[in-house]
Image 1 (cartoon, rainbow, N blue to C red):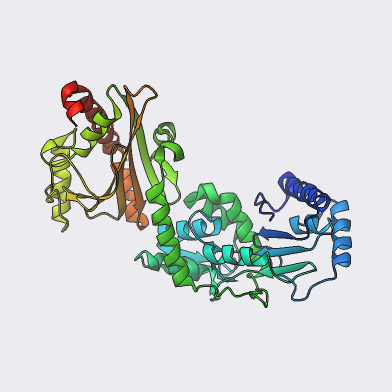
Image 2 (image 1 turned 180 degrees about the vertical axis):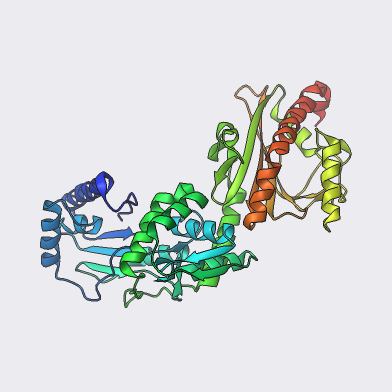
Length: 430
């Protein structure tokens, strides 16, 4: 399998891509590899018929010698049969095309649709892509082949953004615009998704150049039955929820990344505020203080602000701080207390809470405790994350950012102080 490409269509990066692929092909030939499977992004429409191996290799070698061609051409220059699989928009968390789709779909109430945005695509679920690649190992192919992987439905790219918004409960209006406006579209994309601006420009150029992705050309022997758009979006949501529940923010982000920019760090579609303190007490004492949070023990900071937040939530039909703790000292998965629900608990190590208050999005609060090497101290990391729902969600997070800095900083220090203040005998009893 060859899965490397730098998402650049021209310049030094593209040349480095081709050089790397050519070197890989040479090494594969020397090692006796009998087939190469290359997975790439949106490119030119695949050919329906196979070329003879020798002819294709000769053409690829000629293009490589002239410094041109694609990664696939550089691999074919090795003379090894290459099975090239391409996909334009892969629906799955972390996939660049999908992240661009949902950034625009979630943040723009009106979706301008130039000609390139109305191009037809065949979005495919990430699981279906993996099934196709695994299946490609045993396909009876002895010559170079190129296939376009796609889902069961043809849909305009702008309609895909609207479908994502609909899956989040958002209404979006599409306004067709004559012309392509590629430059303006790239600037607009950089504004709503700056971390995906480069791949977004490439996607815009490809949709403009090809007018879409062309018909899906799965191998005739394939047993994969790709999902439709709605099912693929549902799968992506379930996958991401499962993945994010396992994320350790102590490894995914640092506190510096969180406080150096307004609104905190970004991880996929979430805003993240994370901070860590050293607790001069064993990890068991630190986590015991974490488990006592809420209820009669309070939130270790600005009790009046938490009360005000609960009152505001009740005014819009929420539960406020109305849930009572089942146990004042211990928590279990599923427990409701104040305005939070326990969704994950690893005793002595990790507590994940989901917000039950009415929000323009979904919010979580997580605590991680890691013991020091000698066991006498511990590191306590507190992370608040928020998945905004449309513009109201963005405004809510940005406007609440200043008070959050104060409240969350006091909270993590208060937990540490409570753990350090408890007598050693009481810690041993716990």
